[in-house]
Length: 166
Image (cartoon, rainbow, N blue to C red; front, side, top):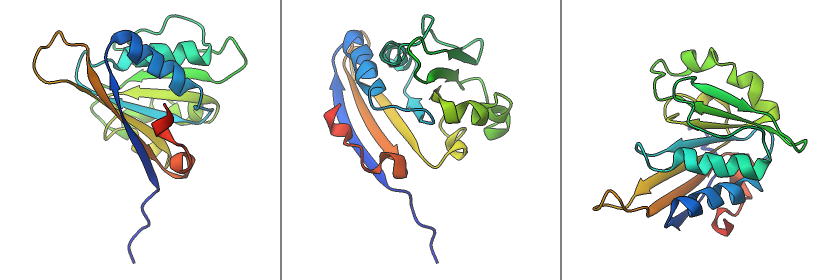
């Protein structure tokens, strides 16, 4: 007997500037709730931190959202009574879930929105439900700010969410 696959929903969006990427984060924040895991995938400079900055603004959290590359994880408490934002950069973590467990994300997850940059193959086991954003640069001129963002909701949490409305 095959294992059941979790439900998947999705959308593809075009983003033309860093300001639009940040606005996408603000819009996404409106549908996020405590316990949500958001995985961000994209090459260096794709806009992962810019999107997360918009998420932080939309969630009303304290502190400037910057890349947590050297601290690995940064917690931004809510200023509005909503969920905290836990921003993780897993780029330098090579050990998969074992190293991620050292960050105690499973403890933070139920009451926070957890955003993980470079989390592919490292955080999927934290929860059956996650929102995965793949950010692709347009090909050609590297100074071009245009991006394609593919949103893929995995699990029951995202089954009823119309990601096309973002």
